[in-house]
Image 1 (cartoon, rainbow, N blue to C red):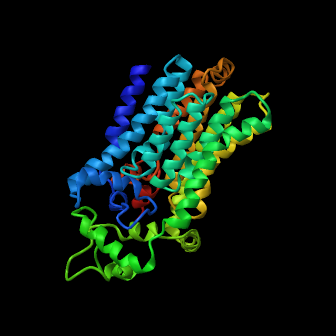
Image 2: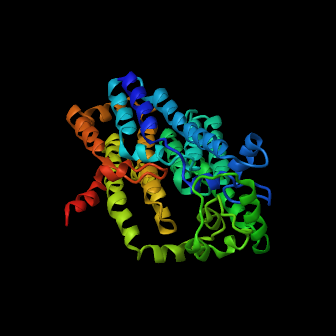
Image 3: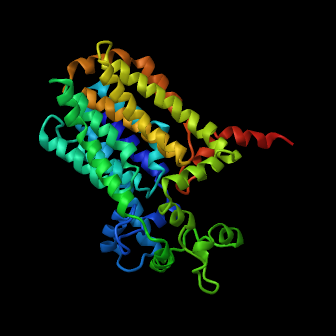
Length: 403
C-alpha cells in the first residue's frame, strides 16, 4: 500500500502537471522592483534564478519547481503521519486519488502551491512545542507576502491544528496560543493592505517593466478585444509588438476588495460562471461535505463544540473567497485538502482518533469513495483539457450527439 501511494502520486503528477497558463506565468514575474507589492515575494526570489529577463524555458522550470515544492511537501506529510498502518494508508490513498488533489496538481505554477509547501512543512513540526507554534506563525506571516489568500487558505487551519493538539488547559489559554498563526497572517495582511499598493502614477511604468522583463512567447495576448478590455495596459505596447504577459494577471494584482466585489457582481450573472458553479463547484462541494463528515466521525461524539467549530471553520474558510473571486476549483480543492490535513492533525499521537477512523473507514466505504473519485474531474487551471472527457463535464460533450 505504501508503494501504491508513491506510484499514484507519481501518476497524478504525470497526468496533470502540464505547462502553466499565461496567467500563472505572469504572476511569477511580479517582484519588488517598485517596492513591496502583493504577490511579489516569489518573483523577487526567482530573480536570482533568471536575472533581468525571463525566457519561456525559465518560467516553465520555475512553474514546475513551485508546483513540486508544494506537492512534495504534501507527500512528506503523508509519509510522516499516515504510513504507520493500513487504515492511515487508506486515507493517504483517498487523498492522492481524489479529483480535488488532481485539481491542485493541475494548477501548475500557481502560488497556491507555495502556500501548500509552507503549510505542510510547518505541520511537520510539533504543535505542542513553542518551536512548532513559531513555525506555523512564520508560515502564516511569510505566506501572506507570497499571496494574500494565505489568510483564509491556511491561517485558520494552522490555528485549528494547534487547537486540536493542545487539548489540555483552560479554554482561554488554548485559544491564546492557537490564535497566534491567525494573528501573524492578519498582521501580514494589514501590512499589505496599508503599504503594498502600486500608485496610479506608477502603474504605467510597472506594466512596461513587467512586459519588458518577459521574453515569454507562451499565451501571447493580442487582438482588438483585449486592447479594449485592458486599455491601461495596451496603451504601453509600442508599434506592432504584442504583450507576452497576461493582462488579466496585471489588472488583478492591483484590485482592491471593493473592486473584486464589483467584478464578482457582474461575473455571477454570466452563463459561463454558472457552468463552473454546477460542473466544478458541486462535485467539490460534495467532496468537502464528505471530508467534514469524516472529520466529525474522527472527532467522536464526545468532542466539544469548540473542536467542531475549529475544524468546520478551517475547512470552510477557503470557500469565503468565492465572494470576491471566481476560482471555484482552487477554493473547493483547497477546502478538501484542508479537511484531509485536519484528519492528520487529529491522528497525530491520538490512538482514540485512529480507532475511530478505523471504525468508520471500512473497506466498503473506502472502495466506494475511491471508485467514485476516478470518474470525476474538474476544470484544470493549466493547459490540460482532460476534464472535458470525464464526469461531470462530459455531459456537455454528450450534447454533440444532437443534430
